[in-house]
Length: 104
Image 1 (cartoon, one colour):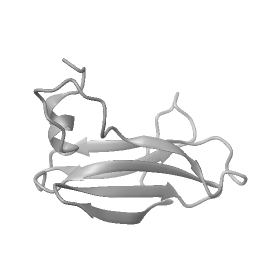
Image 2 (spheres, one colour):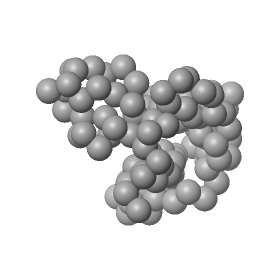
Image 3 (cartoon, rainbow, N blue to C red):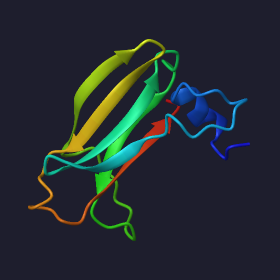
């Protein structure tokens, strides 16, 4: 009943029987870089996680270019992952990031 698709509940190691929002991806600017922090379930080995970016939401040309994983921490049931866009926000002021979770 929390509006999160079951695939994403599984991907983020959430409980689909609880209406919880804790554990959702969080984005922002840290140390002059656009960042995205998310949980990756250790059980979700059958899913593909890809952090993507684009400069224009109208065109929707999402790409993994210039995006790097910078931190991966073990949190028992999941990995806490932080990815960033490699161009400082001062050099590319308009960008968007998303987490694409899919089945291969």
